[in-house]
Image (cartoon, rainbow, N blue to C red; front, top):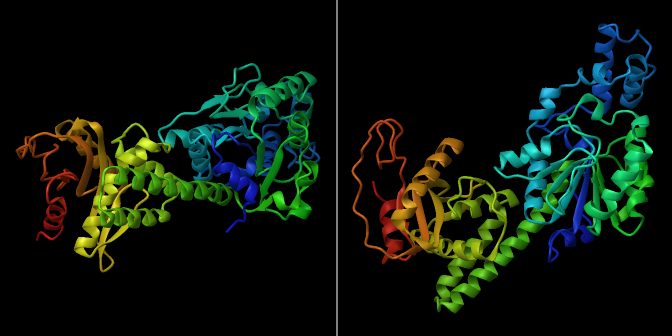
Length: 465
């Protein structure tokens, strides 16, 4: 497990957020399933193809693994970068799925922890990770585009969405004009955060060194610089260039580093959930025994990643438009009631509770799953009948995406109404009914946590047949 400096962990949970900016290199996109080639491998393969196409002579490129030198040679011979760029796996770069490190990055940006991510890569993995979470971030890949103050990915070297001539491949392309414009942007808009983390820069290369130097010069030494990479601190070129202190260097892979930052925030969010719930219950004169059930449930959440917590909050809102809901006090309060009832049911029936990455909970008995439980809320403004279509739709989506949808739904925050009569199935082929002949039970048992004897009703359902 990677060791993250205390100052960096403190920045992740600081009040007000936006205390951290991040600079990401090629090492972040190597990990599966993003699986982008490193610059040396990309260059070597492109050189081979260029020789095969007779654009270059065999042996003409002195170091086939030096992408910057190869780009300069191709430009000298053809007056353009196009012949080189078309050798790149452009479609793979455009569609590269975000690895878990990128998903953590997006989650931390949505939480307001990371204000900006400066990418030195051409691939679109960060924004694709946002799409995977059904969220959006602003993307800037040209100098003169306006840059928001937060939640923005900036491609300093351009991106695969631009033309071949817009990609910064040659040291000569780092003109004074490029430096001056980006330096002003970096200084005034992007890296206002007091902490900057450089990740996955890898081995020294002229164009990377120039860009890192520009960033460092723009910031001076008024920021706390941190760096994470695979190699040892003593042999890291960029650690020396950036004057990174030894205790500010993290040895570890991209996804583990981002996972450690996300885990620290998740622990803090579980704590605030517990405190918000306890305050809510005390204000409403809930019995101490019931509050204890709730506290017990919050301890089980420690097994969830930040992504799992975000999915849990999205589910409580019955959100189908997003797979990640940032933390808020209302979300914590909406979640508290169903969690309390979940704990009461578990204790009454001798069950253990296990959260899942899909934002649901497994009830287990003797290690065997007996139920998959979804927690949702009407947020104090909707009747159960108004929630029913959304519950059915989300349950079906969970079943299709995970292979195991919920069979029990606990609903909090509903407006009072008479209990609805059972619905007779209208479409026995593919409908919303309780029993579907083709797909089985796609509509779970729904219980409102404020109903009388809700715990006993749940036990009857769990022990039926």
